[in-house]
Image 1 (cartoon, helix red, strand yellow):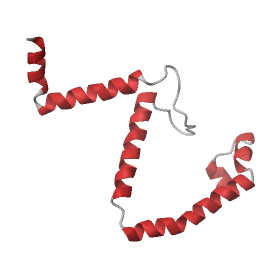
Image 2 (cartoon, one colour):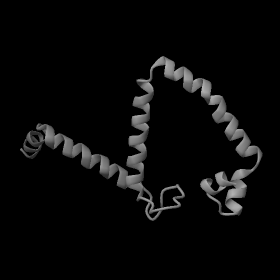
Image 3 (cartoon, helix red, strand yellow):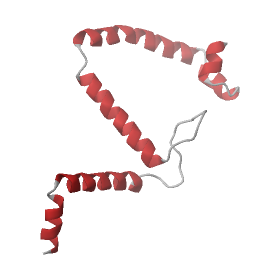
Image 4 (cartoon, helix red, strand yellow):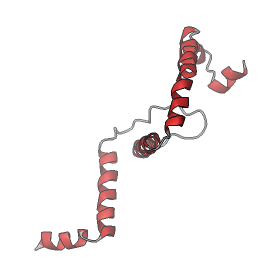
Length: 115
């Protein structure tokens, strides 16, 4: 009898959405390490707690996948042709050891761009 009554509650769309939301939040909280901040160095503002960080990153990945799936072929070709510039920039950044310089001198990317 208990399961029949619980099933009737879940049969409404709003209750099903609430249960899915509760399961998602429970999963995020349950799989997040305690006392650990997200692995992002934030120079301004506060870091969000793990569950919020993971939810936002997951939403961003979902939206990026949706954007990629709906991208027109002409735009995809421009992105592919511009990827050389991205790779070249990453190579230059690594070749000049800019990451080490930024850590040793506590310089952020904006101050580095000004130099």
